Length: 278
Image (tube, rainbow, N blue to C red):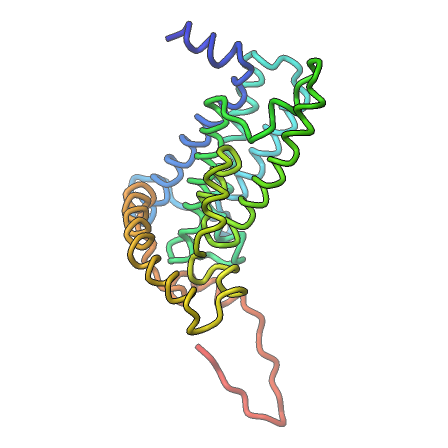
């Protein structure tokens, strides 16, 4: 096992990425265990950090760890020792804490256990998939050609440039069509992004809103395809995510009383009656 680690991880320069990946996955699993224990009100488990009544979200600790690990990684010159592994691990742990509250950053409110909070889990799964692909040695299309300094590399770079442009155009269109995984994996495997780009968009995606008018044939076909193929996969994905991360079943209005208190007050108008919206 030690020989495999030395040959395939250390000797290939992947030690920092390996440390990041392991710390990221471990950090996500640990923080999800912690928040689920807190939600279940387990008495012996440490609760939220609330000095003076202020709830400090774990994204704050994540940002601090990312800064420490990132700056340390810039200073360390040894790329195969325990010091760079530690710095990369700190960065991975901090990244897990930050992405686990990605939905809070996106919506600027505590939607952790609501339907919108699933965005955080999706972001974590995307990060794990990307770093896992990179850890296996897979690189985006054209990476090796543009890193090469061998004779004749310029010709290869010219040929790859057109393929890269087509590939990234396909990946971009795939993302706009709501096909997140196809767009991401297509950066590494060109055929996937191109095929996803020419197929129908996901209903509700930016591409569908721009290109598929109401009652159009394409929109109807996209809805039928979504209900027949994509929805079962989404339900399976949600069940798997809930097994790991817990159920996101709170209603937004009841998710956090602090959010409602933080909303800006509606100025009183003397010339019109004030209408309150709950």
